[in-house]
Image 1 (cartoon, rainbow, N blue to C red):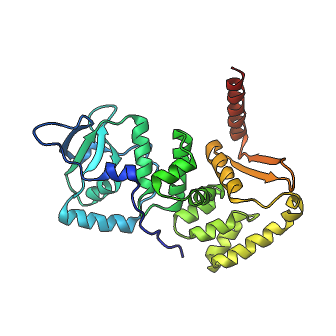
Image 2 (image 1 turned 120 degrees about the horizontal axis):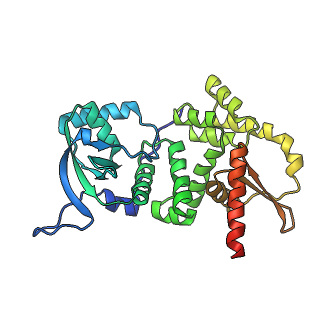
Image 3 (image 1 turned 30 degrees about the vertical axis):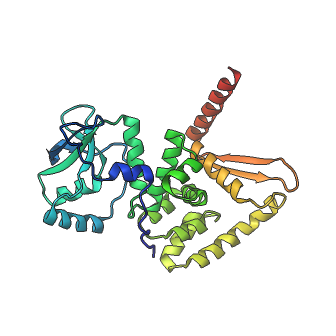
Length: 299
């Protein structure tokens, strides 16, 4: 039902990072590069903060066959493991997994100096630019860039070549319940189906029905609108949301890690801002954030 996303162009910063790196001539070395070498695959470890959680088995099998025949053409980018005794992958985990399947003992790597934060940021950006990344991991990547590194949607839009509306709509998917996100990750639902379910009263039930009956996106949209009809009387006094309001909701949702809803009162400047929390732990986190903000303002 769900189609694989089209191949995306690499962002400007990432394309420079992932380009083939050559050491300068005349014996001089780039101070950022410790060295290019061939390393035993058993001494290379994954990044525990790797934002990507799923790898397409068919694509991995294809890549493993290619690696077995031609080897690793583009070296992995790694850093020395913080605990010593090996290296940690910064970019290239798919190639590492494929090499394992192809039973290759040694693989080429470029060793670079990166801090924990630099490594995480590069891993996120490297992953969200991949053509085969599922939309849920992509959305989580954008949210992590905003939460951990303070990037705004404007900054991400410029750096990654994505429109603000695309970023906002992608991150809105994270407002869906986990069972629906899992169906989206597995390819049982398309992005169009998932977006149509965001406004539904019971997205999980609608998602299960969509998969079981093979409902089209238009059919899902119709069912979502019907389920939202009962809420219209409660929200009729509010203005219809414009693109800026929707974008602001997405920004606040990403920064807080909780669903934020903004409703402006029609014809006035006031309105209601709602924050949804999943459990008492979420509520406690919100209270701590508000307390920290209040203390900062009082200084």
